[in-house]
Image (cartoon, rainbow, N blue to C red; front, side, top):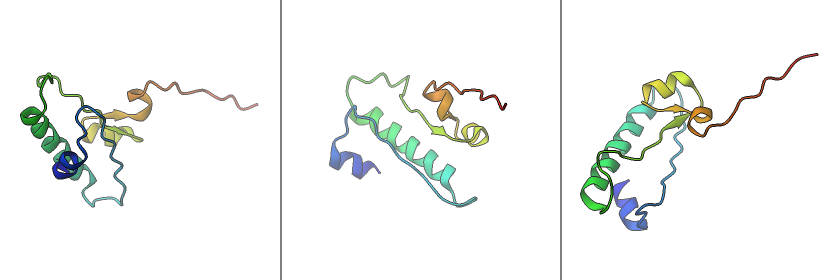
Length: 88
């Protein structure tokens, strides 16, 4: 991942990653490793960044998964209102 970032020179551009797979294959562990390595890289190599407040947003569809990755649901993270539909 770090080599990919270096090669494409993201700098301050956001990096979007979509992880998909079955239960128990290690998506959460993979995501946490990616986040830790990216934060470590940015702390050392990116100037003019407030290293005390890293800008990482981890979003998921399901609340339980959001809890496991220290993130939030997509609706909460992007401030998307849910509509109530009445059944007549």
